[in-house]
Image (tube, rainbow, N blue to C red):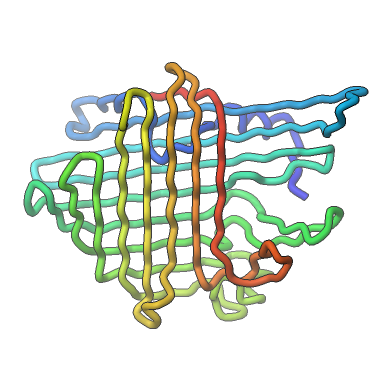
Length: 302
């Protein structure tokens, strides 16, 4: 059972960001001093907290507490021929329903860095690094009173290094194609490593795969205060090109005012090496993982 053990942890969550944005939501990036000419940076942070407390409520129900936070930071360098884009996304959330204890609802660490050399106004040669993991243990609850650890920090950890061409015909869309890509899977937890979780051989901590990768990103404000963001990442190992690792994140942002936003997010992930998923029918195995989130919260851009 996921527990919040001190007020300091709650305070950290409250002052982390709420928002499901993949890039800064609102404020234009602040220019870094002239000593770093060509660099721009920006981001957003905020928090969402909800509380339901019932006392002698005839309609029934359960007490509930929910905390969600996310921090997004971006830094971009633009020179005469060189561009370098960096994005860091941190997210953590938990909910306590009916006094069963806090359980995770969100947990992510994502860092993406892309370095490009301009070949033409719409085309660059580029290298990309994509790193993903989580902060805390991930637990499965086969019964209400028991839990099983199925993931933890750097178990798994994913690092994909790719080289290819980046096509960016407009400022709100880019497509990166990489015929040369290396995907590394880390399983730092000894118990999960011994079990051969996430595709590693039992007892080993790292799995390396060579393959081809694709990354597409889209962000556009369609009407005033409504923005759509989408990011699709694919990886196909050359050892078996039919097993495509897929991560697809979609987000619609409704800006209510300077500090309040409504977000609708859908995330889908599939990796045939993840075989410890408890499916809807109660069986354990591979499955497409889907997460939908509708949230209202405070967001501050910088």
